Length: 282
Image (cartoon, rainbow, N blue to C red; front, side):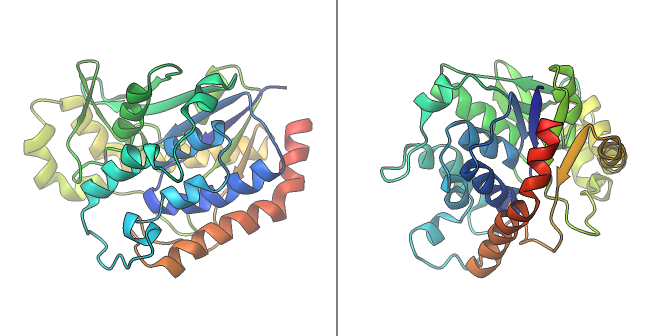
């Protein structure tokens, strides 16, 4: 039985995913294939390196990790992004274990939205540290907040724009079942980028028309994708772990709210661990 793990993004809402993953690592549960997009790409890396607790710390504002107060939501988002993706990977106290990741026999793919084609692309890397981090960085390049990332001569944006929860990719990679960790909270709606048309049109319409059209349709695509995933869950092909309560904001800086999202993920996973084990064995 080949079971895949798929991780949705959500910036600091991924602290819910961090809690779920820590609970899973305590049970030593393994998957044959792992895919992550946006913040979920960070989850994928730290799961393969088996560094329990690291994603929890990684998603905190850098000031909070240092015991300082991070008081502004938009306090240097691009700087925080660079620290999280690049600098913290080589942190003296908590470095990312590249060797363990590269040596893992689990296939891991990172989803990125190609601006030229307006489609998702999945990339993997098991040798080059910088390229691996560049792939994660590209997958986390949110529209409006970050410029398009350059990888191998092409332009990329956040993977969630074209494939927020790539369970289809897991089935394409011959998984029999797919376990999904979603950050979609009750009543949550995907970002409707058509509301920002006046900003996005001059940026992308002429140079990257397919990407622009994708942005305009993303809200509907996500809604249809989630409905299809829930249908697959009813058929026993997919198992979804998702929040039962509101999580912290995407760029939350208040530690109690951050910690509450992590604890909810951890406790939620503990509560449903038997269900996950049964899903993987059936």
